[in-house]
Amino acid sequence: MPYKLGFAFAIFFAACCTCQEIKPDTAQADPAQTAAAQSVAVISGTVLQADTHVPLKNVQVAAIRGAKAEDAEEVEDGSAPDRKFSTKTDEKGHFEFADLLPGTYYVRASHVGMVMKSAHAREGMLVTLVAGKPQTLNLVMLPGAVITGRILNEEGEPMPHVAVGAMQYVYTIYGRHLTPTGNTAETDDKGEYRLFGLQPGSYLIGADPGRMAYAEGTGVVIGPESGAGRGKSNSTTYVATYYPNETSPEQATPIVVKPGDEAQANLSLSRVPAHTISGTITGLPAAKASDKEGEGYRFVMAMREGSPSPAGMAMIGKDSSSFKLSSLPAGKYKIVATQTGSESGSYGLKEVTVDSSDVTGVVISVNSTASSHITGSVRAEGEAKLDYSKLLVVLGPQAGANEQSDEYLAGAYAFGPRADGGYAQVKKDGSFKMDLSPSPNAYQVVLTAQGADFEDWFTSKVLIGGKDVSDSGFKAAEAQRGPMEIVISNKGATLEGTASDARQKPFSNAEVIAIPSDLKLRKRFDLLHTTTADTQGHFKFRGVRPGEYVVFALEDSQSQPFMTDLFLKQNSSQIQTVKLEPGTKQLQLQVIPAQAQ
Image (tube, rainbow, N blue to C red):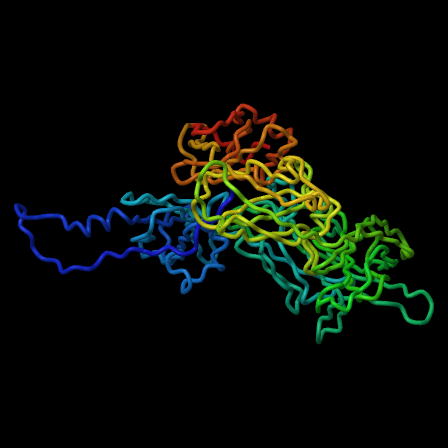
């Protein structure tokens, strides 16, 4: 069962004592000091530059207990002093964290102009600490890559205030997605930008001029522009453009950078004919006087094929059913209509193709369903006494194997408070209740635990009206037939072992993945398991539902299409199929290198 480590742990500090000479024949170890030394752990090490092996001084090193380094900003030193630690390297590149509680830590180094040499540099290096056993690390850093360029308009004039970002296609357990790296910049008055601190790799560079934005003081209009007169408007607009000068990321040319490279990507933005899509939404419930502020509003979004963000969006008043999306270039769109509300919600989708003219008369039919009120309980098999208040029940849309539904993807960009599904905190006695948002798709149940005590538990059954729907999922109407009963079991499997390279040496920070052999079961989020090997290549899964799984280890999962049949076939010699039963199973895995595609 997925779980999060608790946020509050006390740190035990040994009492300081005055040093004094002790004769060898009378020396006795202080029991308090011995106990203190055995109850804490130490991380120390050196930060080196990869190409020169020179120690790096003044490097900021962070160690975060039970959280990835990329989430470090969410952990404040003052509010959780026992969870986040930081220090700087000395003249010899050395650092040390003393008196740490045993557990799992992510360790990351940061320095201006440098990046960590690691396939998981954003998360940091995973370290498992055992009391009384110090860990010594060698953190290696590379000169960061830089991509610079200039953004001009069709007249050759600089375009200021244009957002430029670096993106990468990454692979996750749910498929391939175009993902922003977080490296963004805005062009200056010369139209110039600079993206720095990039890991070696392949990037798409995109420039987004924004909607209805104006570059103040320059006279350059970035938003839509219309012709004069009362005739046809001849509206044009700037659109998001990808290097070299493509309007779709699928046609963009990637820029490959090595450590310390400074590449250039200039783009020229041109106005293109802008069109509108207008129409009506049918099936919407009438606004109620009892609607709270912020409820009952309708949102319409134009999702463009291949684009990670909406091409256009409009908010419609509570009493209106008409919509109009402006400044859209030619292309294929999915027009998504949603309505927010605590008691009811609506969703509809229509595919629209824009050629050389405006599109009118689009009718989007929505499914309007009152939110379902779900009640249920969680119970454990056997006589175990558990604090169920640590559990959270999450109901999410069920996607097909290896893909997410259109509704789920569209919902990710909704700016209103709409979200398919629901969640509830379980009470101490195991009971829960929630409002379930409407959806035409089936739902699935995922249990999440906050804190310890549930690492070895998994969801055994989800019963509605006596029927087990854990594999098949369920519709909202089915949940009205009676209370939901979620049965959990601690008779799961533990899978542990070592990930190694081709020379049988431990491979630190390898990502280990276990997925059901049965394709139909891969749509269950709680049966898709991932973990990261520590510095010794050791990995461990706990609370795995018994069954047959495909298990493998990757050097860099984000660059490897590991959920495709072709990848699994090409690397079959390094992939193991195991049947897991209650108890512990040992496994040795050879890491599939990143270049193996």
